[in-house]
Every structure is written in C-alpha cells, then in structure tokens.
Length: 215
Image (tube, rainbow, N blue to C red):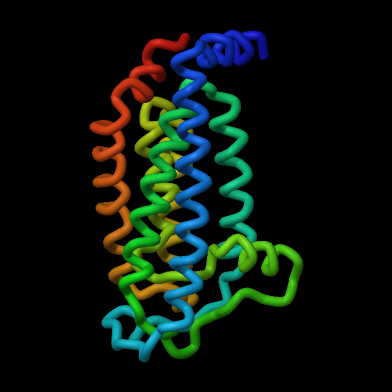
C-alpha cells in the first residue's frame, strides 16, 4: 500500500497532474462520441451480410461471458490500473484513442443484425450493459480488442499479459458463437488494437515514459 501511495505522489507532480486531467477530458469526450456513434449506427443499420464463419457456427447463448464477463473485466481492469498508478495516464489516453477510433468505424459501418443474434437478457446487469452502450456497433470488436490492448499496455506484467490475452481469445470466440459480431470484427480487433497502441506510443511518449520512471 505504501508503495502505491508513493507512486501516486510521484505521479501527481504539476506537469503530470495536468496530463492526468487532459487524459480524463479526452476519455470523457471519447465516451460521448462512442455513445452518439452507437446510437446513430443503430438507427441507420441496413441489412445483414453473409459470413463464412457465422453461416456454419451454432448459435449459443453466452451472455454470461459477453455481458457479465465484460462488466467484470471493466471493473477488474479499473482496479488493476488504479493499483499500478504509473500506468494510469498512458492507459487512459490509449483507451480514449481506442474508443474514439472505434466510434468512427461504427458510425460509418451500417450493417444490420445477423439472424439469430443473442441479445442481452432482462436482468439488471444486462440493463447496465445496454445503458453503457456496450452492445452497439460491430466493427471492430471491443470485447476482443480491449483485452488485447490491455495486454499490450501491461506487457511487462507477465501474469496480467497472459490473463488479458486469454480474455481476448475467450471473448472473441464467445461473440462469434453468440453471433453478436461478424468474423471480420473479431479477426481485425487485435490488429486495430496493436495499431492504436503504437499510435499512442508515438503521441504520448512522455506518459509512457512514466511507466519506467516511477518505481
């Protein structure tokens, strides 16, 4: 606990404090952008298209993984990053880039729902999942892409790297079996996440440097 407190004190020097507030601002803007992009995409969605994998895969109700699993992953990820303050600013900014770019792709991709798609149920967690806008948009899969992005951010942490890579694979398989994503959404997600990570490395060099500087 003392180590975490020391890291927060190192983190919140004046220049870094300003960077942290900037990270919160762009994260808030990206969340708003994501919400409106998802709403727009839902209203203008057209017909579905064929998919080599979905045309042959069985349809399974995997909401326990897709809904509850996603919410738990978000909560655990927040706790992990809060317990590792040196990752905080870079993670917030990288996540913002991910959400904003995905919102752009969602807004310009108007594919309809694939037949038989499993939708969230009537439970409170399902309602929370929908309220957070986690069910909107297809390209690219956030279920697959976000854990992969977290693995890249926490690459030095071997345990968390393994956990997030495993989570990305489990989510990717689950959303395909539930037919809530087209196969291209899942297959492209790791490549999109890697590109976003490299873009963040370029844009936020000083924030990433904190990871090495803060002990």
